[in-house]
Length: 446
Image (cartoon, rainbow, N blue to C red; front, side, top):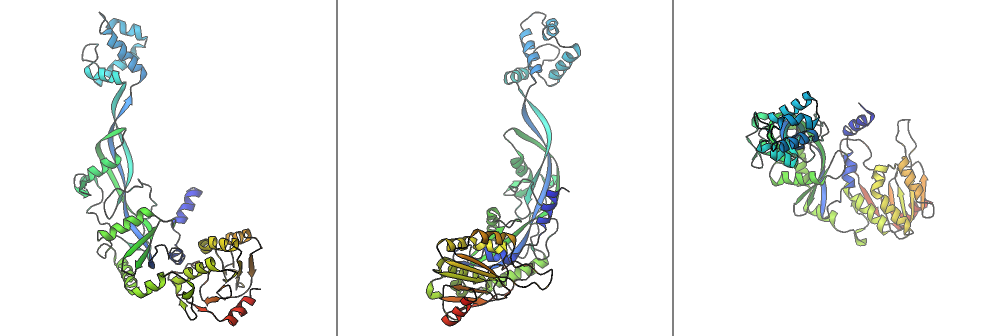
């Protein structure tokens, strides 16, 4: 296996950091809150299809020349005797050409004259030829449609333990014996194949063989809900990038009632039940509270912030601070910092003094570092006029906005989601507006 393929295989098998992904996209849909995030293993049939086709091909110039000479000699008495003399071709080669065009029906039998078909071929200087070819197609295992990726598929033949696995829903996988059976969208398998294999340059004449294997396309699905119980999805591909096509596909699953318990494994049923419980447990009041705009009156002493609310408050501070922002986060990693880098840059540019404290003394050589190289490089780029980075040994997690209020709790502001824990953890913070206590904490940043 080449180095590139090895790297890609490792990338495919990485366990996604669902906490970080959930945090990054928690406010993706205005008016909706994210109530769950799940890995999804979606069934796909990858089929190698062998077929025959006919296409137009240019006739070889030598054969064209011979046919033109034959057409001319039709007007000459005893033209056969002149053919070899005019062409100056070796006798064996000329006989071979005559045999070929006779076999193809371009010459009349037993006389040196072009047939009707031969005259048409000579006029166009193109002929129809039949060939065999093969191609890979991917079939959606739920809807039976041919997918747009045309055979490009990461070969995931084993599902993840904690992923929801959808079992194939189509009546039968694509097989040669099912060519004329109803397959999908009121079309037979033969019709689907011809439509997707057909090309402007050739016509499909027959399907010869279909070899099919089942695989999974791996997605990460974020689930959102608004106060009116409307649901939305956001689907990411294996590179953890937004996949709009897959997002539309999951909307279709719900619309056509295929996102249900009947078409999943027993383990997946348990995971779906957890998902349903989270949907039902997310109340209208909670959604209204967490989606209303953050304005100054909303920053009240004694307010408790739950895990999914931290991002909103942090961005509010980065966008609205007038003089200074103090951030203490024991660890800093680039995956999380990328979410906020633009807001931090803008704060520094508008003259806000931003101070970041980080660092915990490592307990052993395996303990995680306080800051990674990418984050250090970004902070270095901010200059020193309005930005300071301070290394310390402190487990506190604090954000201070000017001297108006501070948020303290368990939330790691610049590294949340950076671990590989399988289960989501709770993170809670509180707002403190006591000026004396705020000044005490600010002093620790000086």
